[in-house]
Amino acid sequence: MQAASRESYAAVADRLNAYAASASVEELAQAAGDILDVAALLGREPGLRRALADINRTAEERSALLTGLLTGKVSAGALDLLGQLAAGHWSTPLDLVSAGERLGAEALLASAERGGNLAEVEDELFRFGQVAAGDRGLAGAVSDSTAPVARKAALVRELLDGKAAPVTVRLAELAVAGFEGRGFTHSVTRLVELAAERREQTVAYVTVAIPLDVQQEQRLVAELSRQYGRQITAKVSVEPKVLGGISVQVGHDLWDGTVARRLADSRNALAGRK
Image (cartoon, rainbow, N blue to C red; front, side, top):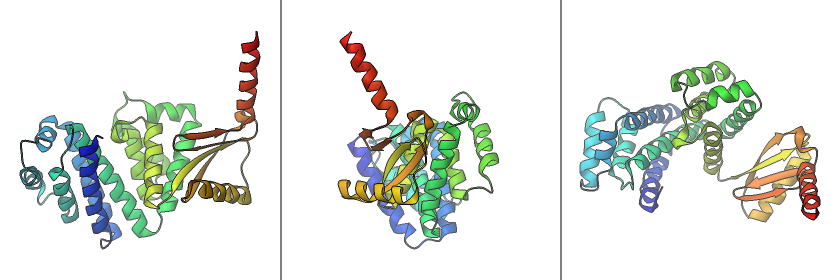
């Protein structure tokens, strides 16, 4: 998003946070579902999204246009938030669609936060991404851009219903649909990081050859939190192919101390001497 779109989204995010402070879990979940449905509608209807992003219309006119279409069809909470969304200044019509998707995802996360299981949802979504990455057939199925979204969503429900929180299942459906235009893997990563941000934490992606024990993970998190000056949550992947050592990525920062990386560096150095 460009600056104008980011500012508009920040305003509607503040509105969501104010609403979430008093809304129930059920009200937030209903609002999230309504917002995501409207975001999907905007994705399908280029004429409508262009009209709602038209800078020649005033904010009040854009808001009235959308709320007029939706009154009586969505919850009161969703209607208020979508009215604020339409009143924003969006750099492109597609920014409006992405903002709607993110707002719906944030409302889902707010419902999990209100229900006291946001950390659980974050971990479940990360583990689902890891399971998919580790199974070639499943990875192909959820990442196939030519497959109908409904079919991929049905696969997610079959895999996760009864095994993960309802919010996790809905977020996984967003991931296979391509959250904010991303592929499956990047969609999962983005949603996990949004969950962590809501808990005021930053994600560290840790790769090791064998699992860390509880004390090792706690020491690692404490050291990373000290270095970055903010709370860190570790998402650990076990990949025997790294052979040993540890790789840690926080944002754009990557420390790769794995044996596989050192061997690769040694091979490259030897090849350079020939």
